[in-house]
Image 1 (tube, rainbow, N blue to C red):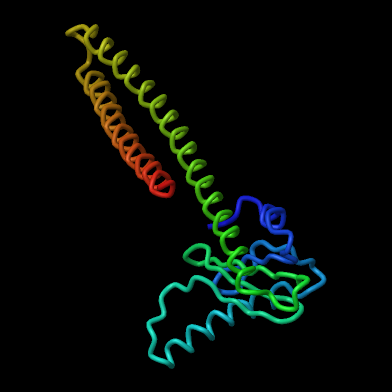
Image 2 (image 1 turned 90 degrees about the vertical axis):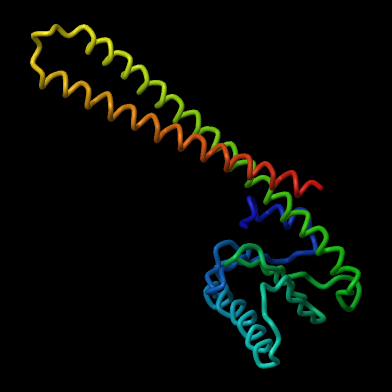
Length: 210
């Protein structure tokens, strides 16, 4: 899951000094770090942290599933790495507070606020997807209506044909009608599938609100 606006994090969490979003392969795709630092190297090392943790689990014969977070604290900067999507992660760099160390209570407070942001952005993305799907249905229905109108006109033309008309012309019109009817069936199936997806997305939002 990608945050709609990376600045939202810094606005909600003034304690955050830098933010870096990266894929499992180490590619940084959003960050507040300036280009003066080696961005590719930053992503590479963040990904290596996760890989080393995974190897550590394997060495200890622990079952390594999707991690949730990694926390590293020093006197100056503390880092929290969180899993976002299947292949994406976020690293938050917190500046030193008045206290000498970033206490567990502070980390818990940050985590709660971060999770709220993630949930909020995830719902926004789902809503945007629903809107896009509904717009797609609108266009499909318009296309379906046009094709049905074409079928009506062709049927009228076919009925008005005189007996003396060339048989090949009748077959040509009949074939065109058949093709349009098949298109209508496919469009109706597509609309039904998208409606099912929309219902599933709405259900996902409702579950998240419980």
